[in-house]
Each structure stands twice: as structure tokens, then as C-alpha cells.
Image 1 (spheres, rainbow, N blue to C red):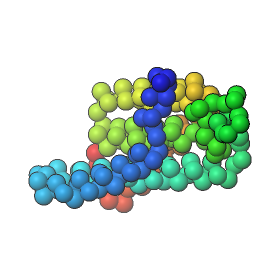
Image 2: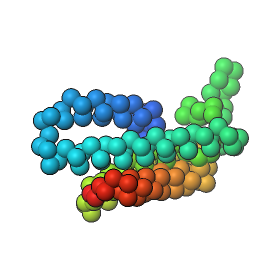
Image 3: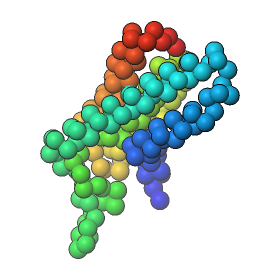
Image 4: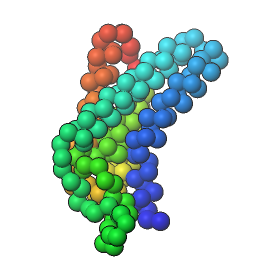
Length: 168
């Protein structure tokens, strides 16, 4: 198994979207055990993360299904010998993996505001590179995914902060 494939799995949109459900259930299960002064911060952080992730995925997949740009690879199908086993059959633009992982990292950085967490962007860049090295996206797909995944959480955070008074 190729290392770039393992790295690309970190940005799998379906995983992160399912994770939001697990996150909500976990919060509902343990919220009473969280100290009162911390509970509000956790609740706001989870909401910012979930809203950002679903909006990012919605934008990325709306673009992907409305802009017919073929991938730079040939998906494997019966009778095709020269194919890319990592190539999917949907459109290329933008990279959903890149959008989602940049959204996850940006959301975490906005909520926690810890400078040492900036190293998480290395994970985002590795996922973005994996999409290129697996030859499943054009550079513009990856760049657009990174822009969507970075700016959606910033916008969501600012709107949420102004409406709720939340400050991380």
C-alpha cells in the first residue's frame, strides 16, 4: 500500500462527517461530567467545528457535482488495464479531501487558539500533496479545496462569535 494513500485517508470527507455525529453523541453522554465553566466553551467549539465542516463539505460537493471537470486519471473498471486504482469516478474540482482536512485544522486552531497547534497545518499540506501524488487531482482542485477549507471556518467562526458572544 502506498504511503500517499494512507496519508490521503486522513482527509476522507465521509469519515469526518460521520465523526461529527460521534462527537455530538460523546458530548451529550459526558456533558454533565464537564465542569460548568468549561462546558460552554466545549459546546461552542463543537458547534463551530460541525457547522464549518458541513458547510465546507456542502460547498465542495456542490461545486464537484456542478462543474464537470474530469480527473487527471482513469478509474479502474472492467476491461480497463491502464488505470489508477485511487481514481474515483466523480468530477475533480475541487478536492473534497483537501477542503475537509483544511477545515478541520482551521476550526481547531480558531477554537483553541494555541500557536503550537499550527503544526497541524503540516497534516493538511500532506493530505493536499497526497491528492497530487496519487494523481487524482489537478493543482487547481487542491488549491481551491484548501481555500474553501480555510476560509469557511473563519467566516463561520466570525459570524458565530458576533451572534453568540463566544470568544475562544
